[in-house]
Structures are given as structure tokens and as C-alpha cells.
Image (cartoon, rainbow, N blue to C red):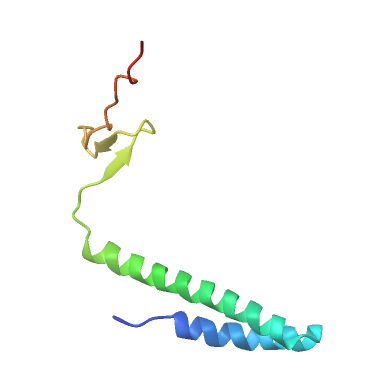
Length: 94
């Protein structure tokens, strides 16, 4: 589904569920508002998951980068993958 968005589907489902909740709570306006919020979140989550799987498939270069937790990355062969960001001298003083 290249170029398609799930936000509309999420909104439609959310408004439907929200309307049902609103009718059950005897406050349709709050139910629809909740449905829009839930549906929008659901649609955006499905979009990002779909885009992530497309990006993973298209950009797999075969190089694995890992981090040692200290801010420096390592390639799969253990070599340094980048800079640790360096540091300053802490500023001036009197």
C-alpha cells in the first residue's frame, strides 16, 4: 500500500467506537471527541509502523551498528562507528 495513509481508517473506526461509548455514557460529544483522539493515535501508529517496515526493507545495507551504552557506536566487526561527541573544557573561571 505505497503512498496510502491509515489515518482516515483510524479516524473512522475511532469515531464509530467513540459514538458508541458516548451513547452508553449519555454524552455523545465527549464520546466522539475521545473517538477522534483514539482513532488519530491509532492511524498515526499504523502509518509509522507501515513506513518503518518499508524503510527497513529498502535501506538494508548489511552493516550492523550497535552502541556500547556510552554514546559511541560500534560496527559489526567491532570498529568505531563514530565520534562520542567530544567535550568542552568546562568554561572559564577567575
